Image (cartoon, rainbow, N blue to C red):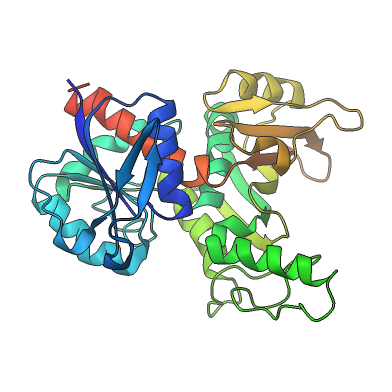
Length: 340
């Protein structure tokens, strides 16, 4: 016996990836519905060897559905998630709308699976920000061993994190560099993204940080430990898919780099690729399509008493969004609903 599953936002990058991962991981499904806005009604999307037609989310009856994966942005989620939840359908939301609500669990299954039971308060579970998700997968097993005091992270985030418009803008600007008369001015991003990096993701806040940086701080505290201090600099780079992060960690206790490497090798959701030779690390191009979070460049930080540096790479459309949402659905099924 399987579940009746809804994917809302099935025409977007993350929604399509959700369908791919549900199929790849053979999530137990008896019936599936794919939703989007009215203008996409009738559009066809693939689910394994099947073709599904998009239904209008405005007219959808949520009664009798078990789980809904939402990838429709905060504004639409604010309208439709409460309707689904009230009808008894558990919502797993990829937007930022519910992440900081104390009555809604924010979950990365490898990190805080026990939080799943908190969904009962509102029948909603939040999926974290893409840059946070991969980082906390790396932090948690190290925190369990040596207690993390402070994290300094710089991100190198791909344009797919900004949706299809971001990917199109990088593609069009890159082509425009080589074709006279086809230069493209920035629309989605604040400045040219082709052959450039932009140290701004989301809007600026009063303290000078961006909202993306604030998200990494707040979400790490909620998911891992409220006592961890985090400071982040988030940068958009001309990469289509795959987020990278340079992470500096200060611990309460000493943690040798070799022990850290062994801990990470045994940790769920992680693949360590760490050879001290040219090319002995993972780059975003190599992580695309993979479920894992890749860790490389593990080394002691000699400038502080108990410090480590590492390099963290993951497919942001997978672990940073769609994969994590499906893993939450699996966790929900295994620990709570138990139908599959």
